Length: 441
Ligand code: PMP
Image (cartoon, rainbow, N blue to C red):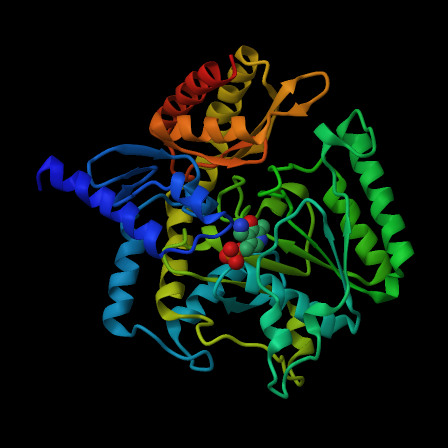
């Protein structure tokens, strides 16, 4: 292919995108303006048709934990597709069973069953449904600063007699989880922030009435809202509050699991045991859409003689479960959890620390594993966020210099694949440095 042809293909990709794709999360014209054409990938890098290389420091949607084109995942898809490419949920199938068995093995003792979904949103919907049916209560408490999905009305619209009427119109109550850098509680230390956030949650539970609350739904480390690593003791404190009031604890590991935070599950670092675990994304690096709920034995047993009124055509899809098996085996065999921890402690953490010394616009850095954020401010005293227009310029400048970033509000999230190397982190830090110098000087 000539260089001219290759450039034409990138132009054609962008033209198709503009003409026919309706984009998520965006005004359509701004989505078109920031679109990048990507043809191929390998590890932490992707390329367009013309050969322009990008470091993928977004992991796409923070899901490509094992990097692009991992041979073990590609082989699993190939092998399974040649054997059986689709199968309905009630059928017994070894690949599906092996995937569930492996998920049970990495979950705490006493989690033995898995309900598979197509992604993270429907995992959370089904976990909330299980919690409501199990407790006989309605309300779900979750943090204002959270992201749990983007579906919900289809069950309400369903006319099938097995539906639960108005299931998702029922109570949702939000509360303020801990966020030391922007604490509502004016806390100065992590301990204070934890204690006051727990007091606040205690009061919300009392005001709502504990007997009406089915579950607290939490990301152990809220990801999309800013990689808000909780202070020590907070998650254990939430568990204690739940136990006092017969409330279930659902931990959403969709973004934080499978190496992202340097653990199988981020909650492993915080000494807390949930009742339901939701997952998606990094469980198979997003090669085939999949998610699900890992269920504590008593909740699973509750449905032994009761119908669970939920199911999805593609629950436990063979291509998806084949990649789950391959992915979990690869994470273990390649020491990905240890690697992610090493990258966080010895490369990303120190790299961001050094950047913060050079750039007063960096107000805060936080994270663990390959799950980090830097928060940009116009003034370190007032902590005024850098305006959206400047963040859009920073985003564009990063792309121009060959880095695909994850930018949200006034933050840059540093979320490369877990297989990223120390050299690639150093390369990325040099690009962040250049861009912050150019755009914020
Ligand atoms: N939970 C969390 C913590 C997430 O980050 C996301 C996706 N960003 C979801 C749920 C929703 O997952 P999906 O987009 O696969 O439905």
